[in-house]
Image 1 (cartoon, rainbow, N blue to C red):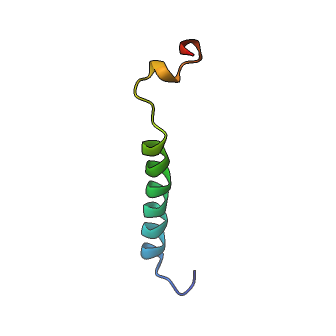
Image 2 (image 1 turned 90 degrees about the vertical axis):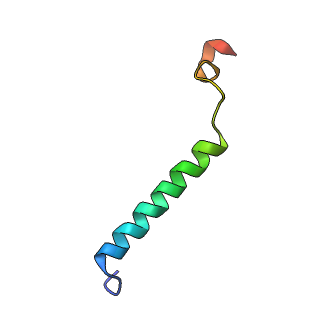
Length: 41
């Protein structure tokens, strides 16, 4: 980490976190909120 500027280090981790959160959210999304409720099964 000492060789990488702190701004670039922060932005790289921010970008990774966005991708790591958005990709599964899009992949595993349900069509409606009601589909996520246990009573709808």
